[in-house]
Length: 392
Image 1 (spheres, rainbow, N blue to C red):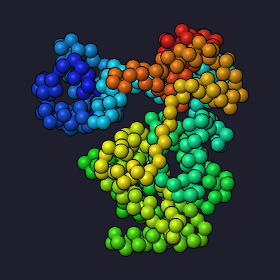
Image 2: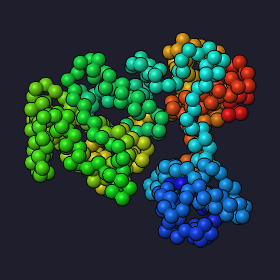
Image 3: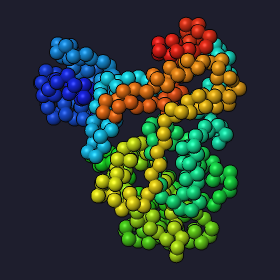
Image 4: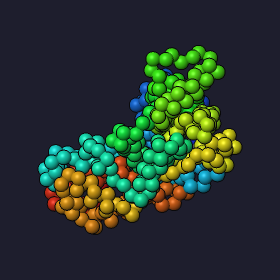
């Protein structure tokens, strides 16, 4: 969805009038606003310019960010979930705060940093993973799912640390020499319906399991033969001492039928022993799909453990201390207490019906503080304070 859609609603600009003014059909305008599908018969830059010009004639403010895609879950109310926001200005502010930032060489020199504490290169092993009481619970739950065949979903905002915990789990399996075979189906281009793109179906998951456990064995053609083959391979591998863990990232893009079919995979057994653990990793839309009020997935909801990664509101100081200590730097030489408190306030935004929403997730913190450091270096501020933070 484009951020433009709720902006039009807020300022009471009819979609049909806008479509007529810029010379496209109402259907094309609907596709653009709801799905970000730009008309092929008109250049995007030209259409953006015409829309902005029309908004100006209607005395409606226009912003470049209006033409960016945003998750529908951040803008429109969903039945049974009154916490979804509809405030466009809040969405634009959130997009600005979350924007990717890169630490400049001048900022590194200014703060005497020999390496960027926020890059992926700073994550060398499990000792570089910051944990809270919540994330430690998730970490151990993932470990239990790998060892004993659990069924769980890890939900978190973009940048909350879901992928970091997945990598940590894979390293721990290797470090502790656990006989766990990890199956990760390819999810490139995965969408939750076939109109948007390619969906991940049960047959593809079965094929991924078969080719991971027995690379030299060709999957059977018929569904019945393939699932019998799958069960046999899992059973034989389990009797040889192996455990199996299916991990699906971006699981919020799974269609509901596939979510329902995961229960069947979960039911594969050898006596009392479960043959396959399942971990789903996704954004908050996954929590909505697994809602107890959704009758289509009720059987899955009753069996899956859903855990959510929380924002680092109470752990902001500890997180920053940890990240800079890993690079041999005292955080107090970079940002003072007033700056940290200003970050906390700045990254807690009013998001309409959701009320106050915290953006204090690792990736967002990294990007925002990087922007503060770049600004401080450019204006010659020795240590970031509240005034510097407010200028970003």
